[in-house]
Image (tube, rainbow, N blue to C red; front, side, top):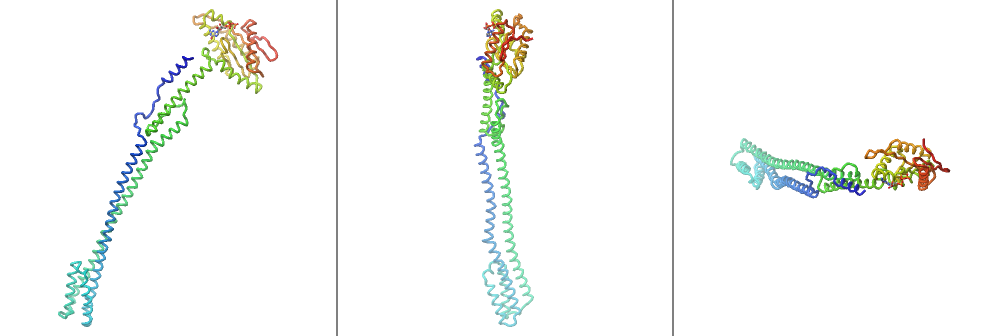
Length: 443
Ligand SMILES: Nc1nc2c(ncn2[C@@H]2O[C@H](COP(=O)(O)OP(=O)(O)OP(=O)(O)O)[C@@H](O)[C@H]2O)c(=O)[nH]1
């Protein structure tokens, strides 16, 4: 038994180690991966914010320029244009006034307008205004007669210059606003691009988490909930973070240990319940099974028969042919039992050359027929020893009706019947039935 056990342990400990997929793949620690991804994300986010800030700065500069310079400058141009128009209307009044008083009155307004400081801001305006003022001054002073053709020319130049001034202001504002719109559009596209980039980064982050962390965790969960020592070796995910991989390898080793323990447990169980020479159940194991069968028969009032068989003159076999020949005879007889009895019948090596039986659902008459068949088969098959000698072996058997009785009592009665069979000359079967005893020889 010790040999068997140590042999079994050697076999299990020498088993080929399980092949673990993904051993050659580098597994990164989750902390490093997450910190790395976080740094990359922070760097990208910071660059994107700075990239956006460039446009925001541009928009701010243009807005400031509009507010501080372009709008006041444009308003100034508008006012200048309006003053030129006023000047033109005033000049017209000077030329068309009915009397000298009205002419001087109109010219007074011209002089006030011409003296306005803004008239000096633009050289074109300053020159033209001076020319108009001088032309009108000569008329008002009477130095020259009103020259309508010359006034028409001056009036047209005033109108055109006023138009130019209005358009210039509008043009400059349009250019500035276009710059601002461009910068804002660019900022909008950049923002969109940034959002797509951040979205893509988050999506890949989630994919990495799902693939290298969450899915392997789910595999671990599935492996642990379905861990079966005789099932397939759990295969670690080839792509997983280092911590997960360590746990998965531990599960593989755990599975291997479970399998070894289960193998050893089965071997020990077999050694504890089986007779090593014949392979039949041993007496202790048989007693447990037999007690359960007897109890079941008693509970349901079913027939059951108990038997004990003993090889005849077995001592002589040992003495004449040696102990190993005796062992061989025991093995041959055990094999004969296995092929003759029904699957539901229980048999064990009760001790030495004795065997015990339980025939469930079987009345003594039927058990006797079974025992008779066994006896005849043994008679038909002489045992051939290793050295070629042929040995005729016989068996005696005692049977007891087990209905309504306990196991120990039935075994004792069967043993008694066995002694009876021996007493009466061996190679026979004695049945002890309820109520009476008798010697029965099967046909
Ligand atoms: N070879 C072998 N012999 C065994 C074993 N167990 C018991 N024996 C022998 O079986 C023999 C039993 O002899 P006895 O009890 O005198 O009975 P018997 O010679 O069969 O005579 P009857 O039973 O009266 O027919 C003894 O010699 C035991 O040594 C075993 O495992 N192997």
